[in-house]
Length: 370
Image (cartoon, rainbow, N blue to C red):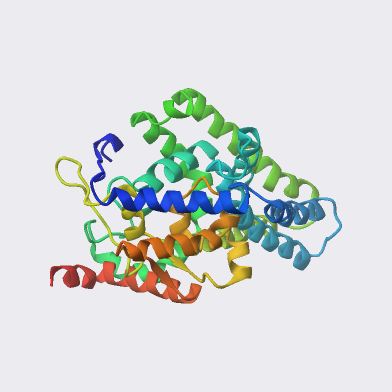
């Protein structure tokens, strides 16, 4: 991966759009006299999501439920709790959008470590690389996978033609991969790219933190149940894995249909590192919304079905995305900038897997060439 510093967005590409959009969104908060951070509804959601993860765990290890069926149900609920914490709490906190108090953001952002991942790596991959270089091959780590092809700018291998079929299995392994291997790989990579220093870390300190967090996570989340729950070890390990499979699949199916679909665009910089658009227009061309009228779904997924608004305003709490989406859409249409959206979540997922199939078989490449 080349240095992020080599990428240059086109600052002359309709800068008036960015100024007007920001002005309108800021005016919305000013006119309504509301904070851009979490409100009471967000705080209630926070309590619910944390409870959805930790209460089943407490009920399991304290012996309130002892049958195999109920224990597996607890693991299942924890899987949805993991998803809820990741989508609705940790995500906002690590963007600094949950609270104006950075200590609150840091505390809630650290919750990702209770899910088996390392918060610093997540911030670098998501906040720094993905949000800045969305769908830019060689820079956006979210479209980087050696056994999948997420962009037409990437080389195609013969086995990719099956990727639409094996993708769900790989997606279900996402959080397990983060826990077992990815965090170690990323610490090494980010050290080589000098990205750890911006987080105030040396390589040795970051590596020590990763190891420390992995050890206490596995001792608490799996070791404690193995010690106190009266079930065979293989059933408890199976439940632990099921929890991660549920969370990994759910998270992937929320994030992937926001960027890797038939409508969105993919980019590579020219030899001088220049890109066609300014950063904000680039986000609109590489990002899509879905199921924006589904209140319950949007509530559970942390407003990330309003992915366009999130990418344009990542420091605004997701609880406000639905309201500002009307401003973003109207302003984009005024400047003739695309605003991609799917009516339902199912439509977005279908588009994603159709795109995977086209990328894998090469039919998407032929369409571009034509």
